[in-house]
Amino acid sequence: MKIVGLTYDLRTDYQFKDGDPEDANAEFDHPSTIDVIAAAIEANGFKVERIGNAENLLEKLASLKAEIVFNISEGLSGRNRESQVPILLEMAGIPFVGADALTLGLTLDKVMAKKIFIAEKIPTPKFFEVSSPAELINTNHHKFPLIVKPRFEGSSKGLSESSRVETKDELARQVDYIINTYKQPALIEEFIAGQEFTVALVGNDPVEVLPVVQIKIDGKLKLNNKFYTFARITSDRLEYICPAKITQELKKKIDELALKTYKAVECRDFGRVDFRVDNEGRPYVLEINPLPSLSTEDVFKLVAENTGITYEQMIGKILNSAFKRYNLN
Ligand SMILES: Nc1ncnc2c1ncn2[C@@H]1O[C@H](COP(=O)(O)OP(=O)(O)O)[C@@H](O)[C@H]1O
Ligand SMILES: [Mg+2]
Image (cartoon, rainbow, N blue to C red; front, top):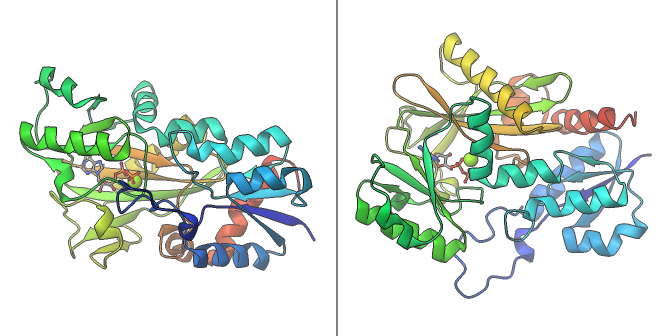
């Protein structure tokens, strides 16, 4: 029986430090998610070797039995955190599921990713970046409302109701908060009112674009000023609707952009693209996640079931895409 290694970061392993925001461990998985993914890999006829995080991998690297590693590790901090496990595996010559270190670093850093989107003519909200609060004094050209995000985080880290700003004072306060709390530059974007969607993709050649998922917040699809905050993720005010209630025309635009984005940053095996669509029906790519959550509460289970397969079969599809890529089957 083939052995599949599993690399991950557990929420329960994270030690909170003084000054950490409450969402410091938001990117990490619950132990139950790891159990569910391990069980799904086993349901596809493999044995699972649980490895743990990058440090655990480093200790076990020479004695690993796994033929391939299913990597969902987020890493501890910095824009290269998601690249740490992949680069160790690449150095050791061990095949792994999912994007490589370059793609993970490029996309975790939203400013770098947006530069690629612009070069590839993928629509993305207009933006600027601020590394120190003093820089704001000279910037007068922006049009409110804006949204202030950390430059390299995920899981809506750093996002609260105060992230959407309408005045210079609010902007300065929020930029200051992001820089000081998350120890990184602030990414400031024009705020796109309207609707929100996310699209999961699986495979390589060909890539399968899965049904569009629409985000409903507080029972509404027309979101206007509402957006995905850290607090909302952990509440029941957020729902996923699949398939999205949209016209064929908009679906076609979103599908094409999702695929173009996946290819532009060289995603592999699976990924997820987040969109806002303005009130004129124009889609904007917010970001691409080459390491999207596979938790059963997230969208992968939902889209699997929407296409008539189980969660376990979806995990099998992702794994098989990697096997095929390495000519392992
Ligand atoms: N430019 C924007 N306009 C409107 N809402 C936004 C914008 N950027 C982010 N958001 C909201 O914030 C959420 C998180 O932003 P995103 O860029 O996807 O970062 P991440 O998911 O990595 O935390 C989005 O799902 C969306 O609800
Ligand atoms: Mg997102």
